[in-house]
Image 1 (cartoon, rainbow, N blue to C red):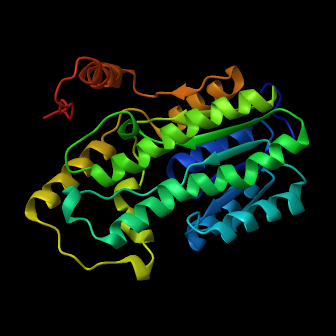
Image 2: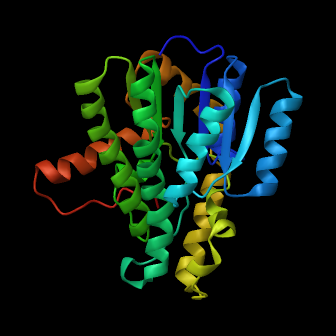
Length: 281
């Protein structure tokens, strides 16, 4: 995708973090922006900030785990701007702990946002892009957790591996059907966002009230510290994403130092070894 001025970008999880940064990067290219988020107050504030900065932007409340919400998001986008050229399936949540201790509600919450959210985005927006017969690009936010397996992060890793696989299959399908619509999968590591505060957006009917063990509390605190101390900012990630769209790169790994860990996992598979714990001590 080479031209961006007056084109339309939709970003889920767009009220904060990586979503907000990507939307702002697109806006600086003269794109029209649709911010989708489940937090109405943050969404209204962010959309207002975009407009005050002179960007053409709207906010749409959307729970990406709900098919009808994502369909309504597409309808609002077309009703307002008439097209969509970039779709960032970015909304995500994080939950940790021992795999067997997670409840059905834990799985439903994470799978709903991280996997079904991307499925709905692809299912609803890809046909629109193909029908337009113009340059367009889909970005699915996964994580380095979609390329690795990590202790006490089973639910998160499962969802992010699904996003990577879905995106790879989407690439093959798009290549077979179009020379104008492409996709990328974003796999960041630690970036200062509110991902460690995901519980704030867990729907009431999916809350468990289960107290966390001391070990899980320590893990959460260590993860929070690692995320908040991330040396690559959301703005830097957004720049990398924009470059990937412009140059048609599929794998978007923002933290190059993670590649040896990915290689270790691949070698575990190829050499028939037990899985290596690549999480730094």
